[in-house]
Amino acid sequence: QVQLVESGGGLVQAGGSLRLSCATSGRTFSSYAMGWFRQAPGKEREFVAAIRWSGSDTYYADSVKGRFTISRDNAKNTVYLQMNSLKPEDTAVYYCAATTSTYSGDYYRDYKYGSWGQGTQVTVSS
Image (cartoon, rainbow, N blue to C red; front, side, top):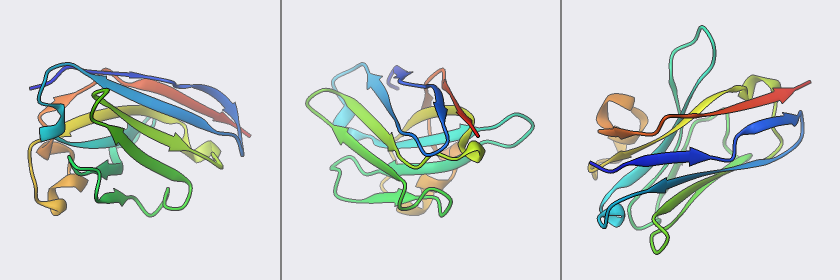
């Protein structure tokens, strides 16, 4: 497993942008596919975006497609989530997670991820 620490959350007005970062420990970061999930109060955790270990393929929830961009820097052991055109419904705690799976169908399922960060709050005001 790897240790994950998110940062970059905060309060932003609708239409604004934030960039979340997820720093990882360990020397095997490049072996993991990375995902971002979010959980709003009273709702289940939901998939946001994922990226393969190589960065060659990315996956997005329909609700964020075209607004959010996931990327990674394996040299820095860090994955990012650039969030643009934020909406109040994007308000949630955002978590990054790591999985060793190479099957893209697994990336949408939170139970396929073995390591999780502590989360960072994103609040979008209207």
